[in-house]
Length: 197
Image (tube, rainbow, N blue to C red; front, side, top):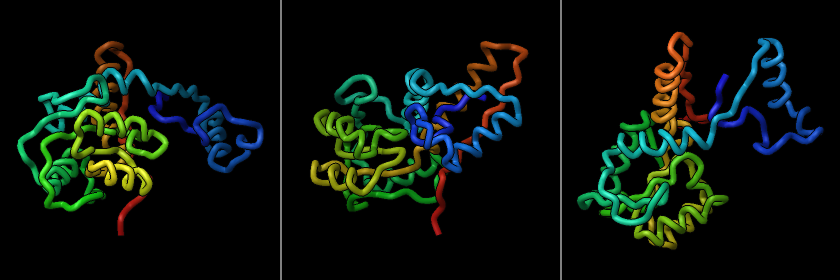
């Protein structure tokens, strides 16, 4: 099994006491029962297809500023509510969280996809602000990061860590199928770990 995210908590190497945590123990038991080898492919799929597939699906092409993942894209004046609807369509999310007034118009958007919208990755968000980002379409964020973005003048739209990466990971699975003909590759879509009521 190839996983994009780690199957254990926390994400670093497990210490002895952490191996006994219920979540980690259940995962290890399943792996042993199935005789499975699990490989985590995180950074390379992000670089090769996850960010680009998310960008393409959102229809973002014209780079206003920045480079690499910290690019800020220009778009015609677009209400944040309209951009949120586009994010919902692309990710398949029924709802998204928005940090600012939904009537606000934006013309420059960055993508703190996956977990780059979390406060622990605030340096990335600052780079988007420095590159002129007026809005960010996140995978996941937290309230502290939303407050930072608001104080910095940037609106945030939160989709889901998994939902914004599924597009690229589906492409990654298709690439494996093309490269390793005869190998059966099955893509498993990761759904958000929560739901709205």
